[in-house]
Image 1 (spheres, one colour):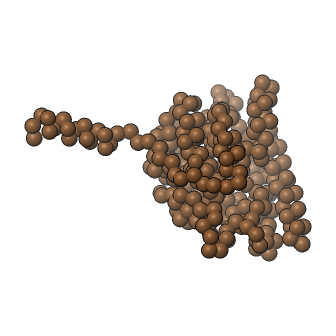
Image 2: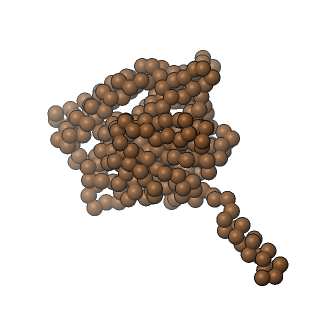
Image 3: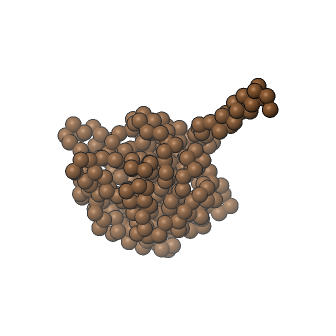
Length: 293
């Protein structure tokens, strides 16, 4: 091989093996998607924990001594904004070592496939949620499942690993515990970890959704989903919880708290999980009354 041919081959290999770039999937269309996907600046919650999601859908970044952990990916069309937020904080999305998912719905798992392809990271969720993430299709036990319909589908995700209830996903010295909290879906997971800033450490809880939302004709009472949700609400209320986060910012009062950041850290509230669980049970009670129970 002469020098010119060698240089051409070398340039081709550099181009082929160059830096990977995020490739977003096709956007999902829904009545609230445009509002949910409005951008918002990323911010530090506490210590190594950052909010990198959109205005209406949460995505959390945890900085560790061996790479990054991303929790939830919002909508398929949210992945670009999440990546922008990560970079604006000074991090590189390619440093994501693990992706955690709260539950397998299009508005929280939709952007995960793009990040998995970019980073080749393992994706972690519950045993019940793993199959749904891998297929991108809701299971028949999901309250939002519709027979013979593509409603709620999202890009299928590779390298999905099931984590048992109470088990940990560890990156470096950071350990994030999976707590099963089914009800909103069969495979809902709440994630909890310790976040420290200097000598001040707090228990952070990313509590999965506990809303009784379903497709037409589904009964939370008759299906047993209500019983699962009641148990999960009790589980969340009893967690060591100094900072509450959740898949939808509305549920932990993010926007109100951001307006009060000059008062200290308004995200610190050791009653947040208790209030979250009580509110979910109030909503469930209203739903069961509507079902005639």
